[in-house]
Image (cartoon, rainbow, N blue to C red; front, side):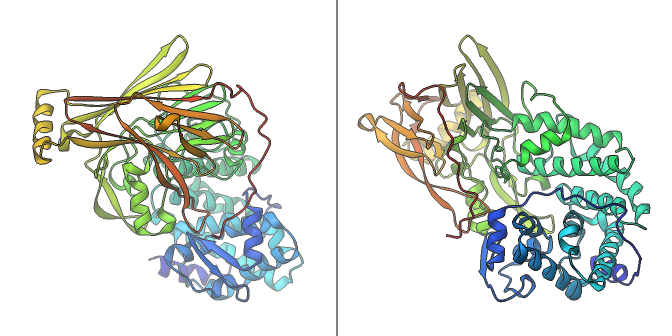
Length: 569
């Protein structure tokens, strides 16, 4: 149906231009733009080096690589460079797309990609049209109108969630910006209002519980609202209320350095993107107490701790979800310290599966078992995905507030059916932000749980249930065993020193780990602190502390910045 409607839309010959001169709204990466200009094409975790050919004549390593190109987000990066070579490439590659695919052919004619592409074409119209002949301008506007017509007919087929928000925001954007396309605005406004009502819950969360995806949805809603206001129209009440609900939730998911917590397939977000989106929304509401989209945030001094304190997504929403219940991340000032490995989706199927496992998160995991398992396959967003099954469903949270500390106790039943054990985690953050006291417990609480635990012990020959508590470190952290192997000292680039100690119940080790980022060609090597123990009784408890070294000041001058680089190795 996409192909049929694409062919029909491409036969239309509407005459249009811009109602008013559009302003670019999307942020690109200068470094990525320079790489594109040099012929280094890094998309969906694959690198193609081909300085001689255009972007449309590359050897496409896989479907995701081609789809990223068809979405035209690379226009943001070329615009960020903005010099002559970058502008000429943007113009030439856009003209070539019209020539090759403008008649309704190619993988880019899907509602999931058409909205994303329309937004970029309109955002960067000045760059694309500057110095171009009238023939290009005519073909550019004609193609814009044809894609708008296609989207008006096919937005309902867009995948639920972010792709459908992109399709509707793109339709509103194009309908307002292009003459002769105004008729598509009102239906899209109403449809977007329904999506806000159906997909964004009362707490400002989305079904996937992916913080970076929530930021993308929030940004699209801001753009659509702003475009409507500039055209003298008003966004629907459901649309505006969704923005008001999402803003405080994103503040709760923001680390001290301005990056997002990395959970359920999401990354930290482009630098400055979150703060810009929050400022653009005009919503000043602070992060609410309690949970936000299932996450708990503790903050004091220059330290933030964000904990996954809810059941993972279920059903189709779990297609990219992780078994991360009770995992946490910690950031001190501008420096991440404790992290989760992140999404391995851009590095292939095996890395995708590995990144979703509990062992890839900073929490407790029984050896060989995740708190949620990968189960049946289903089509999610046009791709086959493994859904989470046997996941925790009873996740209980109690917040703590006392003199000198704030914290929470949270537990889940992900190991109840297999081992009769409930994982209970207690985390307390000192009001100074200089230290954390933690406690992880595996307990068989009910009589039936004890029988299941006894059966699990018997299956293992009475050797006990082996488990590990992991603390994955950011690659910039320099860690080493200290105090005769009883502690680990961790140095941040800011000069801060943090030390992890434990009560001696477990065996402490420093082991290899990885840090997964979609902007890199390969996983980054890093380390993890591991506390290994064996449960042989109905309750096994490990206590640990994570604190700044005594000679580390409360505040440091941390002016060094990482380069805005893109690693190709």
